[in-house]
Length: 151
Image 1 (cartoon, rainbow, N blue to C red):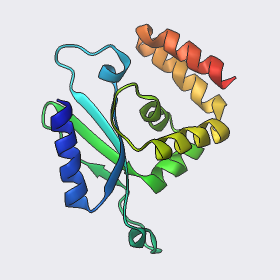
Image 2: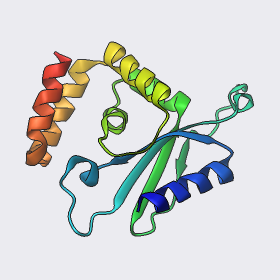
Image 3: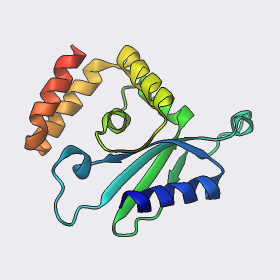
């Protein structure tokens, strides 16, 4: 499946004129509670050429690939992800912490995680961890560890 995912990512780069800098698994497969019929929730961060950013017009900052039954692939532009990181966006923090990475341009990922740790709004993040623990009881230990790190 990894080769299929990377092939899809290469197509996304070609079709959207972007460079994908981080690709991970999100959801049940990443956190160890996938079932036999679980799909692959692939998430990615990407950058455009610098000229794309040099405009005052708002442009679409997400890439969403139609679900095909096995692959659910969505990505965010780096500028969007940095803005969301400042707000302690839980899905983005989950992506950056995913244990399953398909592509990892390390300097970018490391900088984003450091920025998130430095500037995240911990009061907003911990309640989300608690809610996830209620929904997915098997992940409560992981949520407790994360909450302790944030104190």
